[in-house]
Image 1 (tube, rainbow, N blue to C red):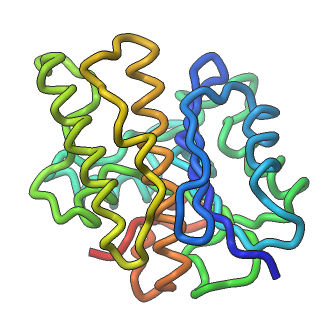
Image 2 (cartoon, rainbow, N blue to C red):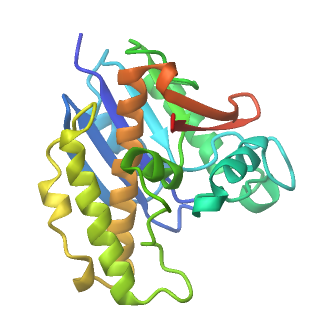
Length: 249
């Protein structure tokens, strides 16, 4: 049997924006990009790194199941209760906000990956399971848990955050990812990504870096969940009504 493959997708809510993708195999980062576009491009990216018959976990930072027309899902509410105090609350997801012509992008992507790659939406991820699983994840609480932070990283561009602060937080983010080589499970192969200088990037180039780093976080959460099993996972909400999976604190 081929080595398991762990894929992270920082999925844009619209195909007009770029999506990040990252792949971990045999304990190393083997691909990372912040330039994926439509669902066909995402599917092709996955196909390039997923050998026939290989187990896989695909972790997506985007709502994968949104039954509610308005308001927010139970998963969003539970994550915000648990992590809002450290700046890692979840965005409200509903069909009014996310659906385009009645279709939520994450739901459509799950259907495509299920049909082509034999994936199934699953949370928690089975301990070293031999299937192919898709789960919804959220980088901000994962950062707080994995890196033992008092508050979430401040690399997102928001009012009041200066370019200097954002560049410094990107550098901190990159160093924390590099330190995963000492984690359980360890992750290597990040040198080309952690050497990128956020202070020299603006606009779309900075957004590309953000998508790439968040996709790596998603892929690592998939790797962590598969390696340790349900005992080291926390699932908010449910697969039926929409879920968010994080490492257990």
